[in-house]
Amino acid sequence: MAEVLLTLSGIHTHIGPYHILQGVDLKVPEGGVTVLLGRNGAGKTTTLRTIMGLWTASKGDIRFDDHLITRLATPEISRRGIALVPEDMGIFTDLTVAENMILAAASGPVDVKRLEWIKELFPPIGTFWNSSAGTLSGGQKQMLSVARAIIEPRRLILIDEPTKGLAPAIIKGMTDALRELKETDTTILLVEQNFAMASGIGDTVAVMDDGRIIHSGSMKELAEDATLQEKLMGLSLEAHQ
Amino acid sequence: MSNTAVKPRIEKIPLKEKLFHKLPMFLVPVLALAGLAAIGNPSSWLTLTVAGLAMGMMIFIMASGLTVVFGLMDVINFGHGAFVAVGAFVGFTVLAWLAGWTASPSVMLNLAAVLIAILAAMLITGLLGLAFERVIVMPVYGEHLKQILVTMGGLIVAQQMIYVVWGPDELHISRPQALQGSFVIGEAAIEKYRLVAVAIGLALFLAMRHILKKTRIGLLVRAGVENGEMVEALGYRIRRLFLIVFMTGSALAGLGGVMWGLYQETITAHMGSEIMVLVFIVVIIGGLGSVEGCFIGAMLVGLLANYTAFLAPKVALISTIALMVVILMWRPQGLYPVVKAK
Image 1 (cartoon, rainbow over the protein chains, first blue to last red):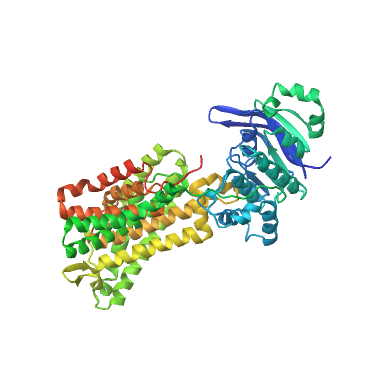
Image 2: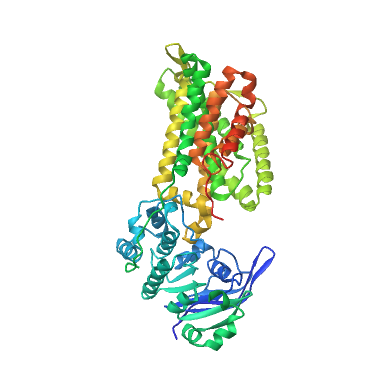
């Protein structure tokens, strides 16, 4: 098995009076796609935001590449090579596509070769390079959000429901792009409601419910094991069928 | 992705939305023309219009920092007026030291004295802004009620410190020789100082626009106003960016203080809190966080205050508040509401 890149041990997160994460234990192997499944409200988005430091864990440890990052500020976590594609896409609609991409290259000028690769991966990025990001369609905004996350080489990309609300044809395109990204040895932690899409690109899977991981293992096993799916179905997977 | 048959398309901006962005730009010329129609006499109108634009520019200088500070970090700074007053007093002190230059017939010496006074005021208020942000604002991020109380407290402390350093009396500043008097165009008398104020305000607005649109730090500010959390997730320390913006905003308030002091030729410890009423009106009219909106709002307030003071002095007292009410009835979030991610 590949080396573990990210480890969450007993993570608890409180948001105001709510105890959202109640002891999350998760291992993300390096170089593959780990899919986080779970019904709405299970704590998937909170897990990603806690890893990114946008919400601070009240208890537990997060280790990235064997370094403790639990208490680090978000910009510091980003500089260590973790990028976030949030559920709301986080596009700066007042800026152009170009400006969004320039800002995303936080450590210096945009790498032209890498940008060309991204434009091949997501053609609308090139087509609408000088357009205001606010005028893009939902699917194009999602592409921009992912493109922004990969404009610099990252070790881990946290992607929160990239196919939410997208048309089937766009979902296929997004799936292809993530598959190509996976081939560049980038590790992806993907929150996804679309089980068909998730099982198509996921290597490992973790299922969440009530702020805890209730199952983790190989995606292939879960996809092929109807009994296991049945067992998890009542808890979480019914939302994904 | 390139293999998919999805044709890229871009959503067309509806005419209504285009007009939404363009309409506020016509408000200033429309108000100026309405003023001409109401006043009737072109000479009086020209004098009042230049006076109104000068007043508007000075308010814009003081308000621009406040609106960006609010937009970027959601901080309501009621202490902003302290920087205006301190700036005016520092400027006054420097001009008093350079009395020989300001009384000289040399235009260059006059302008050099004003420039040094402005730079000194901006330096001191910028540093004061640094201390204010670290000591007073930083502990109350995200808590509006506490921000109002604590920044108001900061304003009171600053006013008392002015009493300690400069005494409780109002002080009189004389404009340098070159900035006294008026140009006479036909029957219209246009004060030289007001033209200088218009020139400085316009230059500052264009510089701010350039920085916000064309530089990386400007992009960061605009992105931060919309979604500060995402800016942090991209690897930028938004608190540091905010500190720079806060210091710049404080320094601009200091610049506005010197200019307002030279405009009124009298300065008091309370001048900042008095002008803040107009500054807040302008920030609200423009849309919290919008520099363009703030600029248009300031011009509208300056022109309206001068026109109504000429046409109906009693109405002048409520004209700016009435303007704010009308604008908010039309656009409840101001002329250019800043979209904030939630």
